[in-house]
Image (cartoon, rainbow, N blue to C red; front, top):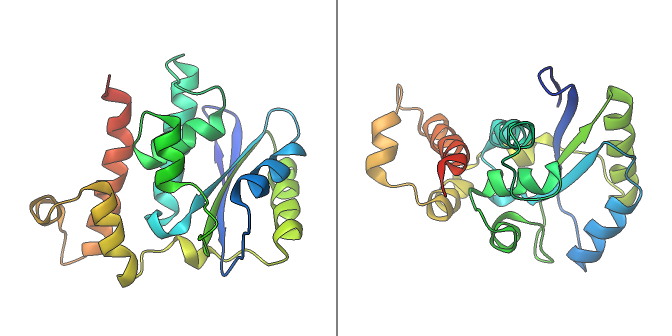
Length: 188
């Protein structure tokens, strides 16, 4: 899913890959990032804790805003996106929380580019590296992911009930995760 963020003049591709076998997650990320064009970024997430594409989209928006306001924690928009997506202020904790691990099977990817061409070229390079076509369904909240996401983000029954709309528990969960993402900028 390619989106244009007009305020930042950036294109953001958010997608995923299913059933990957990553033997060395650090090497996988390092090698993929090595060939990045200037003014672009890429971040990988364990898709098990991704609460739809909106979760990652709002993390990117907050990361870009942090750089614009010069209140970023990290040195790159990609890493700042990881911080916001995980609702963590420490890079190591964010990576441990939502980063790709050797055990990661389903992987979410955020690509930030200056043009549609650069975003599409990066996605094509990732497809080639993993040897698979992207699959956006890994971004969706399955019944199996609900419990993991709630535990990981500390979402209580009371909170969930407070935002439930017409018995749509998954939408309420997404809203609460996005709230956690947004609240990171208010933490000292």
